[in-house]
Amino acid sequence: MTPLKTADELRAAIAGAAPPRTCSCALGACAGWESLAEYRWEAGQMTQVATLRDPAVDEPTLEEFHPGGTRYESPQAPVAPAFFPYNRCDVWHCQRCDRHLLRYTEFGGYNVDPRVRALVPENIAD
Ligand SMILES: [Zn+2]
Image 1 (tube, rainbow, N blue to C red):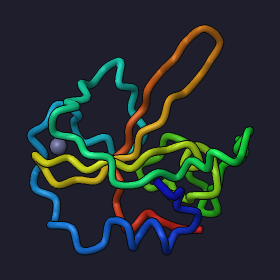
Image 2: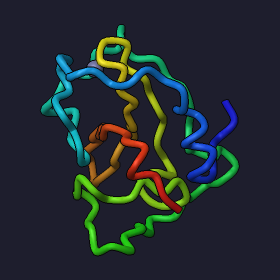
Image 3: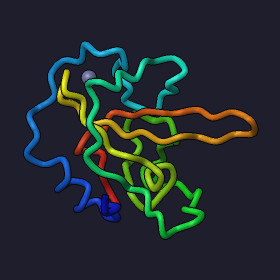
Image 4: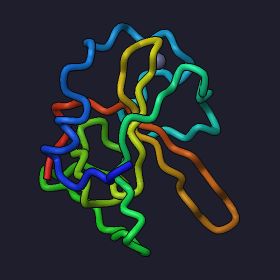
């Protein structure tokens, strides 16, 4: 899977999909980043459609992109493919609600914490 590197590539990857339906899956709204320790990832209805992780990059930047004063967990935080944590995300599609979802694994100390955020085209930026 060729990693997507720009906002335009990410927009193109999810363009033309059916509009999302009111979500009935176990993930909840997840407008901002949520821990999968609290929500259920229903693997059977998820299909990976893209990745933003470049395997050629050993240490993708931890810098975040918040030109509008948002924070990591803000529901309006820009989805900027070159910045943390989007630079280590995979893009998934839920067959049940037709949403696109971003997912990555946060490593902190001895904790491994998979996190998920709904991907809304209006938030994609770079
Ligand atoms: Zn769903």
